[in-house]
Image (cartoon, rainbow, N blue to C red; front, side, top):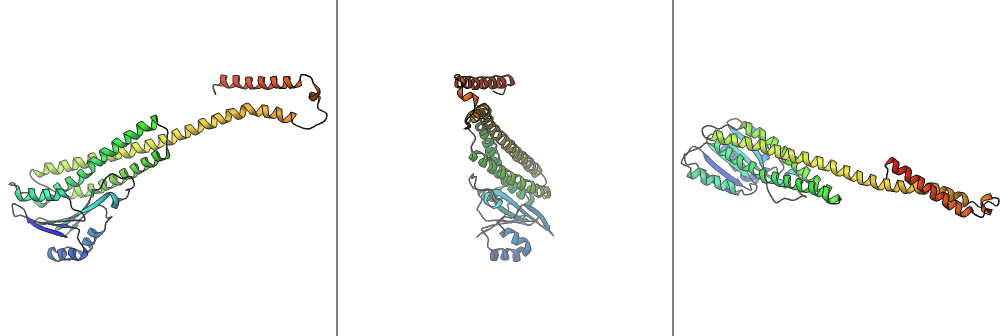
Length: 300
């Protein structure tokens, strides 16, 4: 665990940052700041969704930041993101997270060197901006990936792997969209003043933009999956059409051959001198008639 107590330049509040906490370590923080044990348990749940709570004079926030490299196999909330929990009021702020995040070190340096003091709500606004920024590049990457699959779908043979990859993209976009929608409740609970009001509005604008990006990705992937199924069905129909045409051509010929393949002793045609050529010409005529009929119907 890494605990850093850092007073801001104005001396208005104290910032305690905790990395990789255990239950015992959180209990110590709970005793110092009077935090609820039940709320602290939420900090240890790896798959807890974003939320916002008012605990008397303390405000509690759980946000989720995207982490790790792009991987199709990672499709759960816990696999693609990690929590950043925040307890704050006007006199202190506590950030709790499992993994180290460089932007927190950057903000801590800004808080100690800033000549214009800001309050805890302003600091929370900046933290949430960095949290939302973690969704920005993945949204762009997913959008570009969908565009590439759209080109591939119309210029390359369809493969089962293509459909599987699209499914993973859709699932990832769906999870990110849900996390962002839950984060909207957090942004609604944050209040800021002075120059930081514009910063909070920027965060909310970024939030709306990201939701739209992931919704667009989700919608595009859904359309591509439908197109994939339609193209697959069209390809199957083409194969069935060819097989049907062959069967129609050979069905009357097989019927004729079946008749003359019967082993009856008294069959008049068996004694005819021109019986074989006549039957062959008849079969050719039937085949030609079927071909002309199909052509006029534009089935070929």
